[in-house]
Image (cartoon, rainbow, N blue to C red; front, side, top):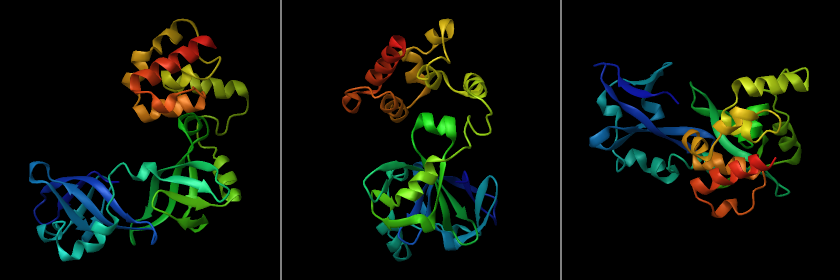
Length: 247
């Protein structure tokens, strides 16, 4: 999403966008939450947005800023979720297989309708293959914590080819791209890509510095590390390092 909300009449920067409020059943963004720092947070309904630029969202005047208890924000409150709730929504097949989690959404800026979702299938797959694209019309049912899709749709998500392997002609091309572009944490869990002095750089401390706990958990999941669900960030980093050293 764009960074700031600016009042067109005065040129005043109100503050950064803290959250987007999405009506998932309708697949439409209905409001933006603006962080005004010490003044708290306010709501801008998408119907009050004047225009969207590369760096900011424009509103005509300060009257477009509403408090949460404004009667026009009733629907906003009903659909408001924590900023990180979006990335926790699972994409699951009707047979119970998890295809990934939501990563981002592409929105029609003239109608605020969601055109498609960007789906993450895990840190390594995202780096190697790229993110999957989930068209809205492929979603069979929408629930609070997950979207249900068909097995055929899940297969198409797995066929993403925009990552490091996209357009590669050989295994050597893939390894070369990984060595050039992937972070030390990702390299550390791909056999044959890192060795010698470079491998030592991927210490547990380095992994902790370069990655969030959630990203480390994804790596641990890819490596099938036992007990990962009970580990803290340090434990995950140390387990990944130990797994790498044993390969």
